[in-house]
Length: 222
Length: 216
Image (cartoon, rainbow over all chains, first blue to last red):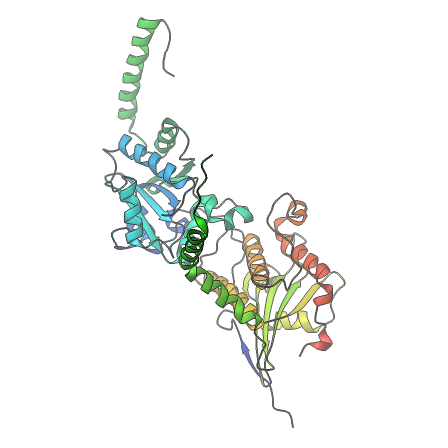
């Protein structure tokens, strides 16, 4: 007599339950940005969306401490950006650098990297976490929709993601573009100004234009 | 150009230092791959099955999934993950219900259907299972990597099949990387890529296919 074969399902808990093509819908930050648990360079536990992004304007890049390619140059550029926007940093603008190699970069390694590059600055946080969560975050914020590039973490170091969650505005820029270009891209995600503020800004700009016309006969700075 | 003469002793010292510096990584890699070269002690058999159909969904693509099977004397573990047809014939990405993969594996198939059954080792099985389990977690936690499930399925089939070859060349591989040499990605709609990938792997590995009558 033969013994009946005992059979176990490898994925029994979920069999028949899966993801279907998503219907078009309006998405906001909580739908788009994973709320994964991370640790800061100070060793503090944080939730990425709830604690760091929700309602804020943020600049996000990916790096790793032993990166010898673009990362040091990008970090130096971000230090310049931080200096240019110093009055806003930590108040209404925040900077996050997330490691691509969480198994190598613990909070101490990130702090050491930040200190070495003069990046221990207000409003700038370096983050590490679980590899699974970092990958989720990397795809959510930096994916190219290209299998080869997306599977290569290094391809995500050359992008600065700019998000203003309060107005659901996303953009990005290559951080090694000129400082003015990076600052201009960041300004595109700035909170909208009131009519009165726009009017005052336009008056100031017009005064500058008139002055240039008086001095040179044309607009010198465009 | 400046040259540095370290002498035989200096060179030996440098090699020792280099070996010590890389020891953890080398040990890890050796452990992962050494297990694969050991002879199996039990009659347990491990299989990876790549299954694909076409012309099932509205875009002419079809179910494409990776199936893993471990068969011992009196028990078998089996599971499949990928895209399958849901109740309304819509594509669903996730763990494939047993009724669906059993029907596909056991029933007579259409000429266009693809089925490649590979006999693999336990370490290969464990690595592929880890890939599928990570995707199961992503489905469970609603943390898929792409907004389009066809793209997630491409990553799944690529990762699962590439894990087979991590230590030894078991599979004649196809480089699904969307590069210039990758004709499958170049010529097909995203939803159809996994099917075409399986078809190409089945063609390249026809000699390695374990036919129905040989599998338990």
